[in-house]
Length: 413
RNA sequence: GCCGGAAUCGUCUAGUGGCAAUGACAGGAGACUGUAAAUCUCCCGCGGUAACGCUUCGUAGGUUCGAGUCCUACUUCCGGCA
Image (tube, rainbow, N blue to C red; front, side):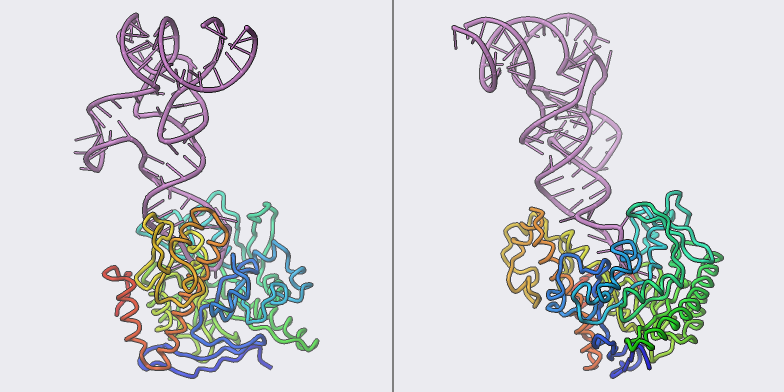
């Protein structure tokens, strides 16, 4: 009995790109797919009907956040993540590994999963005095960002929590190191991530055996590849994890804009072809999506569409705009005339501008629907372009129009 | 009419002899990639990229090396008494 099936139905010659379908107990995901961010068992400001209506195929929640509130036991009592949030589609949980980074060395640095060394974030390489995480071989010692209580998350406990939360696809508990950590530390972190991955697999299999005994559906586990920007470490990590019996793979770490294609290529050339690959936390930029898919990514998740929406930054096919700007106050056209989302079909830039300036909650919702739809539909169209063998034409026309003459570093057309 | 109080950036406000002058809001813009995030950063008297220059704290005088801060008059507003 398998927790998950993955069928590759189309490949794009000369690339690592493929289209397929991930089959879970809660339905299929047509890949490549953009997985919608629902960290605390909710896609911020959207209900599940809206998520479905905008084409979201699957939602990713976070173990760390749900462990703190409401607690994994309560999610389990509710009947699992899907039941709890009234979502009957496929679900993922992230392990909490990223919080080792974001509450650790990155804490209070205003930093997320993208490193901008050119902006002077060298401080990220150092230990921060007030960080909330300490890492040992055993696991990660957290201090809750909510109330300061001490917590220990281990590979075993992350698996136990994820099984209680009960998403279809889990991530192994990994360490996401600082992008500028020195090479010796990266080696140590990768080795630790591998040791943790094996411990995750052991505990995961025990828990799945229990599910099987009870006649419950099995849950799937993805190993998470680390190794920062080191080709040697990324290949080592992909090779190590690829030899183990994971249902698929997550690609973690902190990227420089523009290095996605090379890092993802090293990994995906090494990983077994027949298992799905999830690029953790990437997808704010259309270029990320095209490059990731070209180099073999099947699924993405990213909080940027909803976060940026709340802050007024909206995608259009001609680039991003800040809808709060003065110039949109009297612009009675849709956010993007070519967008088929609910917001663009029914509301104007001027109205969304007004709502966000007025701190009206509907503004967050309308903006989030638009941004999420923009990214989801872009990935869907890329999928179709793989099937139609028109990927490169689509990529060129999309990126030229979106970025004009400001193509991100590392992107070729 | 008399007595008392008050007048500072679009708004509210800090300021008690050495400040172009505090904070908040409003306004202008930028950032945001496994959500610590409806958050953060910058600008916000005029000119200048800047150093810097100029003009400011109701109005007009005065005291002082120096006044948003002290004094006088006036104006307006708010109380109270008539």
